[in-house]
Amino acid sequence: MVMPMKTRYKACLVLALFGIALFSYSAHQRPLGLHAIFCQVNSVPESLENLDNVRKIQLGTGMVLPKGYVPFVEPSPMKADWNDTEEQIQMILSEIDQVVPKVTFTHMDNTTCIGKSRASIVNPKERYCTGDKITVQLDMHDYSGNRKKYGGDLLRARIYSTDLGAGASGKISDFQNGTYHVEFTLFWAGKVKISLFLIHPSEAVVALWRVKNTGYNLISHQGRYTSPTESIDTRCSYDLDTKDEVCELMAKKGEYPFYCIKPPHMPCASLTMVGSFFTENTYLTALEKPLFDNSLIRAAIPHGLPDLDVISCTNETAPVKEKCKTGMEVQFPGGYFLQNVWHPISCSMTRYTAEAEINGCLKGKSLNLMGDSTLLQWMRYFTSTLPTLKDLDLYTSGWYKSQLKVDVDRNIQIRFQRHGDPFVSADFHSILENPTIPEQIDRIGGHQNMVIIFTAGTHFKGFPLHIYIRRVINIRKAIQRLLLRSPATKVILKTENTVWQEGIVETISDLHGYFQYLVMNSLMKGLNIGTIDAWDMTTAAATNNAHPPPVIIENEISLMLTYLC
Image (cartoon, rainbow, N blue to C red):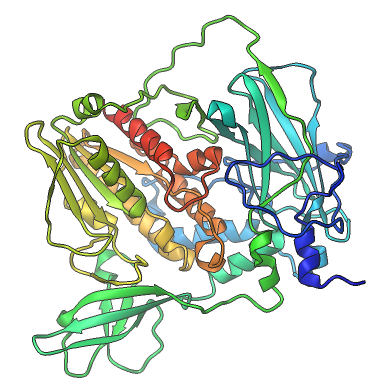
């Protein structure tokens, strides 16, 4: 009997039964599909022979980009071409394009099959001590059982101990020939499990990179013109194909122009609102769509590796680390969870959980949160933790509305304002009351008690990457201007986090988020700012939700307060 093709590829996700291999799932792993043995698990590693002759690329994160992505060279503001933003954008896009595999996808049989791929620990030991490093080798094979001859699989790796509330990301190297090395540091004592996921095979990475740069039709926009007597909605886009007269937005803000069709009898000044909505449009071909079956996205790799019993092999006291402060270099992994508390590797974070501790740090300070709903989670945390904060009605509407919380006795102000378009809210929002992050920063004079926390990511995923790169370059420029006029102002970046991506992969895939994460970290490099690496935290904790759970928010805020106090 011949199994239908779709069912056959789902079967590749499943652990072979009857003890072929054992695998421990993380708490947040989705159940797998049909159980079958079309794609049986192998645990025997490929030989290390000739690997030394292959250029090994070290990655700075727990995921792999094609050919092992190397972070961008820091664009120095002192260079003459730094002000040529478009040239800088094209350079970054070219760098990414060069590392995306030039693979022609012809059949699912040629894509990565996790069940036929092999995993092993390189040079295993009888005893593991805290602080040791281990390397897991992955040799990827396709559905036909052939070893992959190129890299580019988008992977995620972590170690964890559920009972200890512990987790850490892995650093992945791509040998560009189907073999990967995953390096873990054993940060804590106890039983440690290994978790490996294939987010997308390299063939899907190629498809998504093409989709990312094809056009603007994955998100639809409408502009609303209003007058005392009527309201008219018209079509808007970054690339508006029309012979009608249009009104132009954003160009004066140093951003790519955004256009809305102008009603014949209404002026451009009457355009006050814009709505952005997900569509059912797709740039994927019929051949490519099976690559994004939900069962093939973020699929657990059945590695059959044993749990590690890690012990403390020394009685020496760990050296005292300096307190985390702005200007420190970002690394990956940059920390680990233990007892659900984040422990940065290169510095010391103070845990702020009690009301008195948080109020004591925030006393006299003005916090400006600029971004998306992941910073709205911070506002809700402050509300639940600090009952002395009072809300002031700013007379805005929508779930993304601006907020201001104050504690008059302690002179604390906490303000949230969402970033300007693109912002996919499935609703209409004011184009006048929601400036971009660079605009918001430029409106702040700054002082020693002023704090700016910003994030930008999720709402840009449905657009070509050059839109995001230009925005981040403009954020960098605004921060440079701010720190020139007010060096004492604290600026903190919260990176975007990993997400669950079923259903609308073209507009929310973690591949898009990962590209953006790398762009943001690279372009913020060298600035005297603090970084809260939400990507690292959510990878280590395997949360995989657009809105991480309270334990992540609590640790993000503790790290932010450590930068301040």
